Image (cartoon, rainbow, N blue to C red):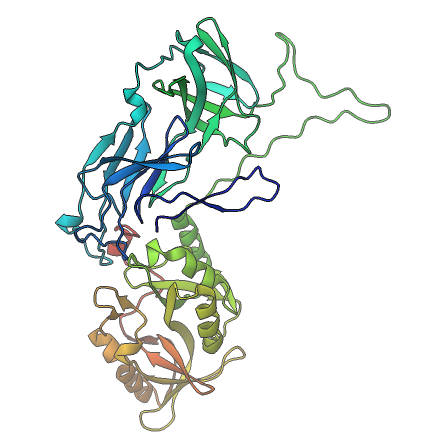
Length: 482
């Protein structure tokens, strides 16, 4: 779209208001604040799809919005498509870096190059009109740090010619959004070869951090920026030279209380560390949940929505913070030693994920007495927490582990195909009953639970198996997201 809306948060009842539209409809474009308060828009495509680069769809012409006049003015055109994954950053000299661009077409677990037409490992520099209106004012010096509400001096031989002082927070831009971007127009007084500038009052109007400070003359020509940091003052009790800090004098009838020790800040653990702690702590294997994201980048890159949906499923006590990107599976632990409520899970997950992820299936690992009840009929005995389970051979389409390349379940290995038959043979040799641990997809037929045997261990008979929540060492050494 080319529509533009603004909102004045100082108004009694702030509301979005339509203003003059851009000259071109755009998507995946970047908007960059300039030192004079105008906004430069670069790149983007008019296509319906985010990777649509057909002839005539990408927009090369830049344009600038002037909030004073509300007018959009066409600027010079770039020579390269700047669409998906492009970036635009204000430089300290007042110019704008515009670079990159190209859709990554990933296959999870497979290295893949971008199509050449979609690959732009280059950049161009845009020089705004204010750079052609005369010589720049100069900043000769200023503080590196200031506090909220404080006044500070900026040294400049052009003090009498300055009409505006602004600062713009350093950029942090991705996917058409500059997360740090904001501008403050600073009050100032002119002096002899210097400006006395007033810092913003508080972090509500100016988040702490580093800013590019510009001084602009009456033609709005900016200086090269001076990098400056704004923070809150740190309260500290400083003793006079040679004196010791002591507790306050005791009030009548009360002992003096020494200042309380400051507790050390808690150490934040990474998701990898949290995942390892959970794996060491949990005595039982997790429930493995097959999750397919609808975004093209795999479960790791699009994990947030699935993680929240899994946490809110009935009976779930904990969700491991890392999924397995190579199987597109997640690992959860239940409040009891029972089975997941498959019907409730399917309904709740669909509602919570709202189409962003699909729940493919559930794999469990359960232990109990396996009995033979007639030919081709194995049953895992029930417990206080779960009903008996009919054991059946695994069907290829029910395997939870996913092949993102082929968009289908991973093929059954030979041992998995033969697991049920091997288990039946072992039960027969054991006289029709034996304790075993079974791993496989769980499904329902009416009110009855069915466990398809993918792996098992039973006394001395073992099919190749592993903790279903363990990512193999080769996978651990590879990136967890594309």
